[in-house]
Length: 464
Image (cartoon, rainbow, N blue to C red):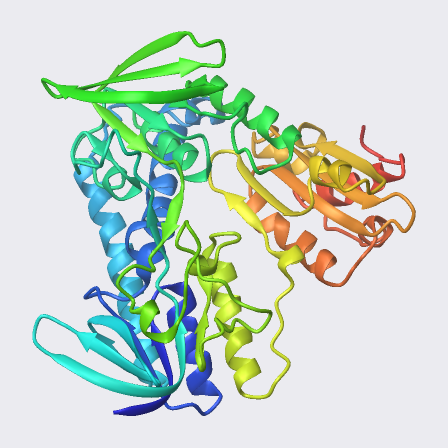
């Protein structure tokens, strides 16, 4: 079989690229080695974790907060099996939806492992057969997988990756989380709300290390209030499972040895690209030491007709980044002006409260010697937040000191994942803080805090 475009991988980047290619008139094939489509994000990542985050949040609200609203809860209980079944239903329905979309757009879906053979040829190997297909353009969109620590490999029982932490059959008594990044804090939040003791060990000096320090400080305070315990500046050195308990040793920055005992350990120290066994050597592609594939501004790998998008090329490992890279690539191949502004990609953490950001942090701007001004507004001064009993957090806007152009927006608070869209749009269109300040926002809404933070940039907030 011959195609115009062959996409290897049916995760967010791959299946979206395939659909856009078909819309643009390309005869397209999409190869996926797993029986269900959607990649890590849909099957064992973004979607199931958000389903559990929502369910656990409802349980926590019912047990801890309904009383103050005059709602009496008697005999409240947790049915973890039913909660997990709902999660599976969400995933199943969405994977079926992707299969429908590929079929609707006349994309040929192939199940099997894709391997580059050179000269536009791709070998597809499944349990049933091995076949060879050919394409003018080949896109590598094989995503990433959790990184293991060499001295504590995953055993899918006591020491697990995010995949295992999404499928515990009972609530752990004590969950030890290695890594205070997005995955560690999200899944730690799920099990803390459901009753587990949660301890987080982080090698660096703060939680959510890539984010603005004000965000990190606020989230550590709020998550500590929720019952999480943190050991920062602490590196894990060894782990051993004895009698169903994981014994973990670590050292802090003062070289003091610490020991932890937990019935489950989640290792969430990052992800690495799925680039092994792709046959990269057959087309002359040499990944870097971490396995990432280098590309140019048009996603070309340097090998004729071979492109790469998503987690395999590094940068922000986010589903929406991969999706838009796939769309931009296909539009470029079709002779259109495919575009992706990497300075306008939102980063979101679905804890409670949520965290969302776009653009630069104060620390990045200071390192680049770019003068800036800051406006910040707390949700506790927002009327809608008070009505919703969600006064934690803030909106912080960073603008260029001279031009007033918005350089970064950082939100900790309820519905931050939705509120950030306004900031992303403002960043995309190079808006100023004044533009946001002059934009009328409905009252009472959480979004008024964005307006107030923009006013704060110029020192003229109304409600504080």
